[in-house]
Image (cartoon, rainbow, N blue to C red; front, side, top):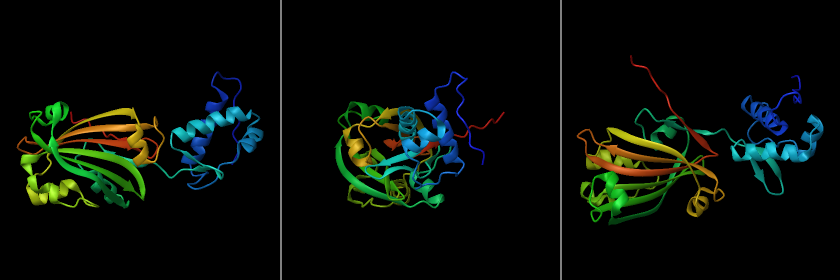
Length: 248
């Protein structure tokens, strides 16, 4: 393979050119997951640029999830990002990961009956003092924490849900099969956010790291709002894929 060179005759920063070259090599499989990236010194000598320039390129690739630093060992190529699923089709996170042969595990952080409060009540069409079942879970894919989920379910729809063990199972399967609450459609909002201290602790990322916030209102076929949930995904481990179809 012919070694690509940096172009000093264009107004594109050298660190950015190097970053894009390294990213392409990762995506093309020249560097494979788990491979040790050449050192700053090696890259500096190979491309004839300063070490601070190399350092900036590596820093950006770490933030984008292509590289991971291990203290005292070096910088390694990350595992490929997980596709968090298709927004336009209704499928649970558990099912979507399982369909692709990925191992999914769930830890229940808390489950309690509480008052909805103003904001959650607005999403669920309830009064602020109405009771809900609040569930907080941490989901792992291939043994890595990738998403923290908080569900808010009207208590009157399934009061015995609080007695269930939701460890390593699909909440929506349980709601459908045992409580007759079958998800039919959803309203979804996506936005980029940053990890707070709680996210950082559970997702094993730094406070302020990028995350993808998904807010979802789920309806039954009869139009009953059965759930409002918030998912906070690690930005360095996956992406959401959206497929748009023209039905004209």
